[in-house]
Length: 73
Image (cartoon, rainbow, N blue to C red):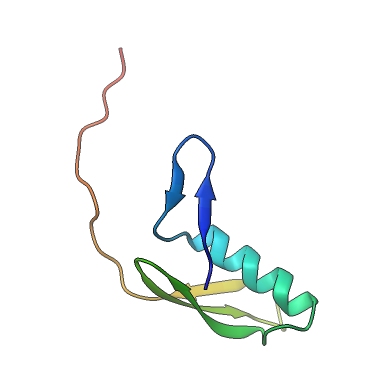
């Protein structure tokens, strides 16, 4: 399980960047395999850190959590 804290926002329910970083760090430390599932309050993300090209691939469900309009002055 991963708890994600974003500066200026607080705890978030999921983060692809956080999942990728957590798996990379834990894989380097030998705590997880390079391919694993990361659990967040919003759902699970499958993370694969490919050995052949060092690319991290994320997969999992997506859904809207908010809709709005961003306006600049």
